Length: 104
Image (cartoon, rainbow, N blue to C red; front, side):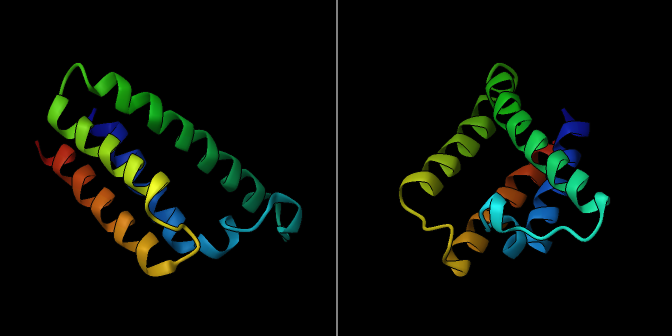
């Protein structure tokens, strides 16, 4: 669990650093190197694994996983991902919970 939390922390940091690029539609993205393409593919794969990990984690740490699920639901229904302030507040909360999982 700790290794996966490190992976998702790195994944979230990648999102923070490349937010403007990832928010574009796939047709509008310009890739200057193959590394950038593979990095984006890895990001989206790990993002899918994040959802699976949360569901599995419910059996081990119900409180923290329910908090992550609550954050996801909050982001989907109440926050606008195109408003940077709201999006970064979600990212900070997500990172805090992932660091708690890493520490515990």
